[in-house]
Length: 332
Ligand code: UT7
Image 1 (tube, rainbow, N blue to C red):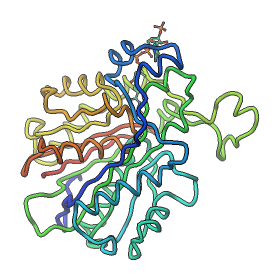
Image 2 (cartoon, protein in one colour):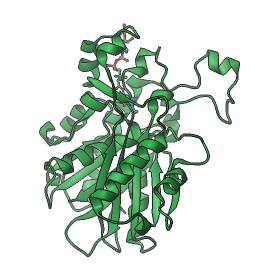
Image 3 (cartoon, rainbow, N blue to C red):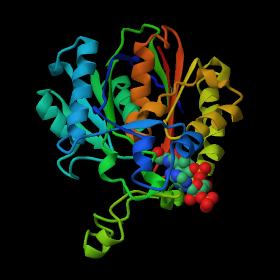
């Protein structure tokens, strides 16, 4: 079952935080054997933002949350739950959620992190919305935040050209039954493909030691080409099914917000769905792949610049380490 039942859930505010420092493709070409032309042709990325040495995931998350609260015009005391989607928590514990909750002074809120690769933000939105739909919570702050630059090997051209840092936040609230509402969601995982994206060392399976450091096992490892094929295979039928289960067709979706991993992936998935690529919200040229933050940043920008209008149906879809994938449909 894909449809949200119970209380209607709406998005009442959004915000983002993008670190100041910009790293261009030309900057990268001085660090590894790559070129602006290769990166643009193969990924669509032109530049990405990188957190400064003293900026942590919780700092970006906090700033995105503050701007979403301002946008929603509500007090922080009204938040019942804070869910942070991240693969780069400041530390394993405490989680980013409780750190943000404390700094925000959201004294009535619980807080926790969700870690499901780049799909974490869709999982977090689905959990937050389910809590409101069922009547357990009234208002939930969902944040996607990443400082991927600290887990990227800046000597590995296969991965370092792809990622960027940033945060996006959304405030979900029980709505009065107005037409604006989250319609449906579906979350999946194929753990048999878990070797496609990994961070091999630094925790229980492979505690950090000199050897893991020398072998760069504390950095992201990815079989990019296989991820590319996996996504092209699973995502189109998965999305078609979600639309069907929601009583919709792909033509009923006005805006497509895919995980901003690679322009070629977005274009080829849309082609397989026979949807014109102009309906896609794309910002990866400026931000690169910000993992769990990417769809929330794109959603914020498309809502604020007027692309997404009242009544529009917006489909968010993501995929990532696990391999997880998931999607959610929102009527603005
Ligand atoms: O958010 C997590 C989800 N992850 C993803 O969505 C990643 C999905 N995969 C991708 O986006 C693409 O597979 C990549 C962008 C990672 C790679 O693009 P590709 O078209 O699949 O390239 P490839 O891996 O097949 O490599 C083609 C060539 C290779 O050289 P040879 O063997 O043909 O001589 C690579 O060594 O390009 C080379 N190459 C590069 N050249 C210049 C790989 N990375 C670079 C680079 N600059 N940065």
